[in-house]
Image 1 (cartoon, rainbow, N blue to C red):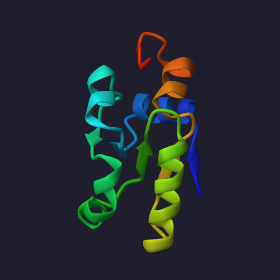
Image 2: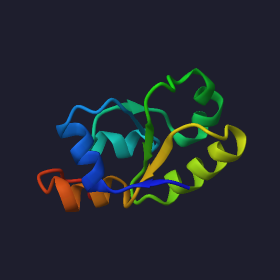
Image 3: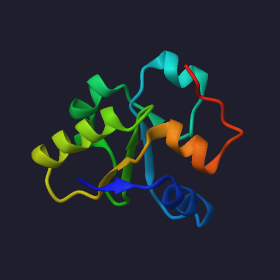
Length: 106
């Protein structure tokens, strides 16, 4: 499984590197804070995954990285070869390391 470190995602954003950021958290979690990108609750990602654009890397994230790790593992088994990542530490890790102004405590 490939992890993307928060600093790498920040660099991608700053360099305008094409990627798709997908938040797999529940609606109430997204309402508290967001990193932007697309929101698809985890329970719907596998069914919607085939319709996602694959020309750029896809970065999945949750709150801590645990759910996105599990999801990326499942996607890699079902759709091998795609450039997909789990954001290490999730939105919490990104906020702590790269964007302290984002308040994501539940």
